[in-house]
Image 1 (cartoon, rainbow, N blue to C red):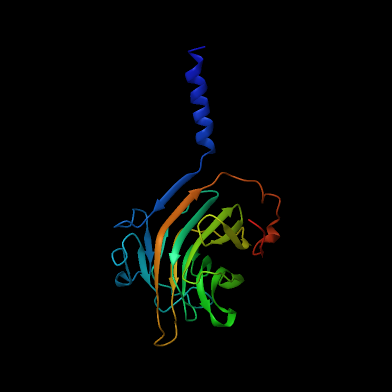
Image 2 (cartoon, rainbow, N blue to C red; image 1 turned 135 degrees about the horizontal axis):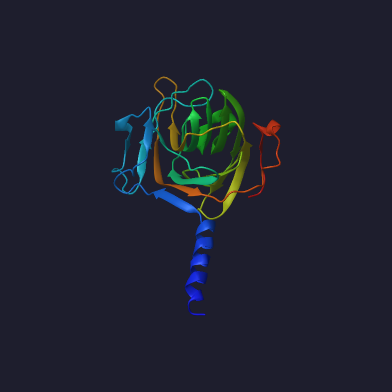
Amino acid sequence: MRKSIPVILIAVVAVTALCQTVEWVDEFDGALLDGWRWIRETPDAWNLTEREGFLRIETEPGGLLYDSNNARNLLLRDPPEGNYEIETLVYFEPYEDFQMAGLVLYEDDSNFLMLGRAYCGYCGGNKVYFDFEQRGTPVANKQIVTRAKDMAYLKVTKEGPDYFGYYSENGTDWTLVIKHRSREMRFGGVGLVTTGDATPGGTQSVADFAYFRITELPATTSSSSSSDSDDGDSEGRDP
């Protein structure tokens, strides 16, 4: 019996390891961790020093939606294979159209998902928005009103072709904004995005990111029965 105990323990550890998720997090403590890359970087518009423990990015004119395709300082890293979740906490209070800060899943300037706190006067002002653009055409946009106006915990969960965007005020209790679906997207980067007021002489703002986390998730079969015709659909459901 004594000889069998280590074998049993090894088996339990192996099974447990297979079921565990793998997490990577950058808490922006003094320097960016290896693996990040910038898209259209403006070095003077970001820093890790003005607010200790935070990545500060100043918004700049430009965006990703529609034909803008010129957002600056996208900070990206390679996503895991399979299912995963990305999360951040951002302190940001937008007050002009097109100001936005949050998460991005990025293939290129015409194919992306973008979840963040943003301002849209036509849409009712400062809210949390989850935008989906494919082949240069906006597929869906959903926004929710929040009690907090100057911060947001944000999370996007990928389950097969489904992408669930969540918002929280405490990092524990999450509200679903909307689910987007795409079998076509091939996101080569996930990370952080800011966009700014694109009008001539427009005002800009500052976003402070507390961390960025990627969690690899186990494979699921919840979406395996959906047909390819579902590509581009979006819907909401309870988390």
